[in-house]
Image 1 (tube, helix red, strand yellow):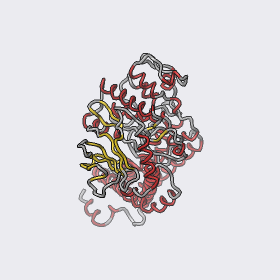
Image 2: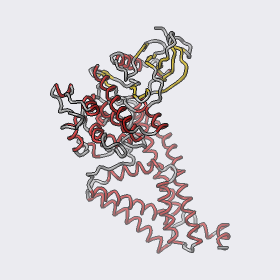
Image 3: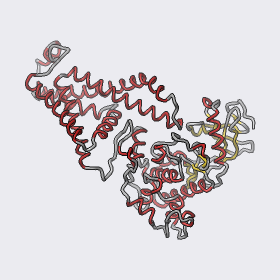
Image 4: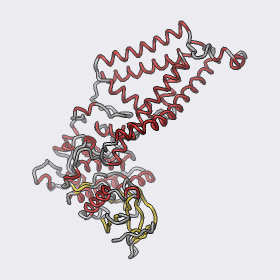
Length: 515
């Protein structure tokens, strides 16, 4: 079918309004020649000439045309190879689950159970024809009344296509990607089970089970299986806990999930083939009980360490107490060293802290952009590392801008504290120590400090291995902070590059004489 050059029309479809965007294209509300309203997905102009993108779109069409379900938006027409490639699907006039929850609040009671069951049936219908969706998430679920409709197979893959299982393929959304995909493992139906569970958790509580924050921090929590089901109804929590298991073999099949939700007595297809023990009368049996009871520990040896740019982490319940104490000791030592250094040599200390914050923020931005570039594209390229290197000066500028905000906020808080201490007649060395501590705390929690906290906690977490070397470093840092404090108390502050304290000369000295 030839596509028209008129931007308001592609093929035989008039484009009425933009209703969504994705990594590959823009989705429009369209009108067919017979007056029907349809959803028209048009490939982005910058990738029209990309043969790989067109092939991906053709595979998407082939996947969709094999699915027949009232709970899945079916393909009505497509032209992957025309001047303006597009795919036409059934139009569902409703909000996405993401927007529905944002506007109406979390779904509760019977409506939540209905959504979980119907969405499980939609995924089952997809799997029945050998297709994996690979991007089940709240924004890809439209609410048709109280029932969900699964849309956007932009990441769908035929499960029997070996060309799509090469190492390094990574496509999806942080918070809904299955952990095994982060290791480059082949996608299986278990990955959609994991995404289904994460989506149901969002419907129930209004957030991903892996929390918010930087994408790399969320992916790190996904990889380690650190999900939070607080607020999820008790009757669904064991099933969702099992479906979110770190290892795909520990998760129930989608058929078992659906049978549990519907309370069916008959065996599932998987049971009849002897693959798993299933669900009877809506009660959990062996595989689900085992997944719920098993401790959520990563079984891969490399899963014990976080990714390059980790964020705020929710630690497992079985984490060694020694590691926790080490983290607390390291953080306390860093606070002592920073506070003591800034108090002893305010100008030099401030400059050194600013340089450190710039470097930490640059590392955070660089790692995040490098990782997201691969996630959005779906696979690594040979030029990823050189491209990151070329972009580092720009990332350094971004890091410096944020660091300036963070350090200035800490300095202003310290100055305000110093003024109050002066009025309270707490001056000189003790006042400087208090100002140094206030500076450190304000900088840690002030504007622009999210990246600083994330990357610092990540390095502290990696350093807390339980060994004696960690304790040695913590003691060394704490002693350095104490030496700074002791030197300040005995010899006074070092005001280099100035010759004296700012309140001992100039206009400020004249003002302070009146207090």
